Length: 347
Image 1 (cartoon, rainbow, N blue to C red):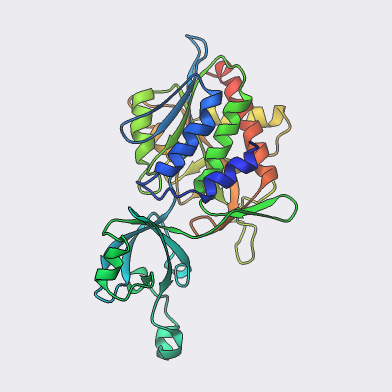
Image 2: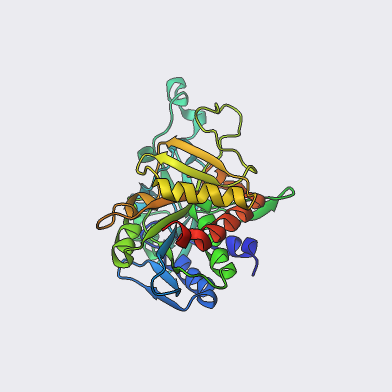
């Protein structure tokens, strides 16, 4: 399968934080041909191991499998579902979205609704409707019917969005944060025919709710170097100032200098910049982003792990649908492969 086909499969799969089973199964399937060993740890992380030389550094690549989503909080007597958020979601994008409620009996389609605007007072129309004033309509007429349909408190809810290619080199889909990183990691392992380093390709769980999977996986592996493969905000859209979000789509992967949780280790940053320039791979440098990645937790493992981040510029992340350039995806793979091969000369 091509990297685009893998991304499509991963993007369309359900993997809301804490319920990554479907994505985990795909990751296991896609990684298995390119690693010497594959295992699942107690937290649910998938770890593919490509063995290298005994004295060479251990490298942990991390791409998180989970996506933002919702979870059933209560069921009203009329059969509507109230929900809580899993991960950072802007309330403004929720109203009117098609969603899928994942129950033990199977998926249920629904719509996020609210009081109709036709009967709202003028002051109500001017306000953002917060998530706790919204509900999900699955077509049930009562609480009892909703339960018979399979709904239970704690069922996860994902956005109903399908992957599609648009334009010359652009794709849109759900959960590119971070299925794009997962696809990049799989393709990296495919192209790493041989490497001196022992490489741990880790699909992590629960990143969106506190970088939890990376924390436990890194403790077990205790790598010499950690690289998170994630997405970052592409700010090249109307209304965004360059000082707010300077990274642009189609101008190459972003290398994090510092974000909310990580100051990239100087040797890791030097490695990534040198490799990009030596291989004529376009890249961008980023600092000051309010969010962070799995690298923040990997870097704090035990006595510390030199860590950095390679990110794919992506528009509209943390929403029901995102957009990225396949050119950026390819250059991210090239940079990651070249960096892993060069690590023994820096560490």
